[in-house]
Length: 264
Image 1: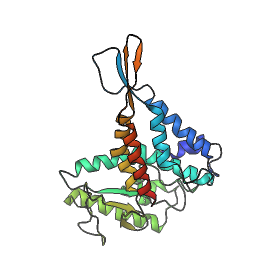
Image 2: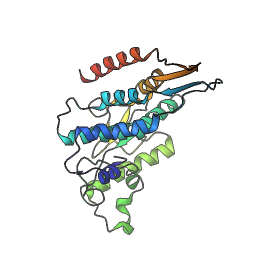
Image 3: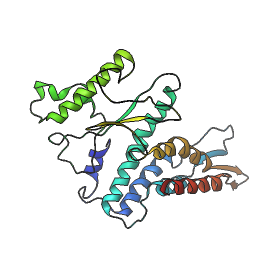
Image 4: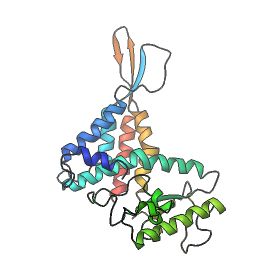
């Protein structure tokens, strides 16, 4: 998990999770900090400004990420906050880039889930998964490096490294990571068919049970519409201030339908 170490250091007790109140406070603070007072668009009229209604944005994100019940175990609240952070800051951007690049060339997307059983990150809590960039150790064959003898690597680590290096070599040489030397399939990513390789002890293509596609479409397709719909245009005329956000009701209604489809 990309920001795991920072979260691990800043929450009161990383071994037991976080309360719902803290979960809500963390998300509110980040959204309000990013959007409060943020101007959207430009206007030649100095008395006319459009800003995002940050409170509505907070409500939207909390509606999507809040666990089914606020009384759930603290570990669940922490897990949902980790998902929010990773999907918003990293996953959505990669997913959006893959959509764009795949329109003109074969594009291969992976998620690296393999976590060694000894050394390195194994002393962290279970909720801390794999840090951003950790796959480079395996794509570069570091389990075989004599200079890293202080780390404990086992046969499973080297097997993952062997396969990862084969995939990288194939991609550089042929433009296809599974051209030769492996016995599994890696389908290219397409805008309408979001194929993603899940790299763990086994290498398997993603499906709805292993990859939350809805989270990325939320951040890429839906959330920008909410920002646009919740902006307030303040027009000052002779001391009169007019607030306008005509599409808010429709957007929030659509979100309700989207969330229902998620959990049904």
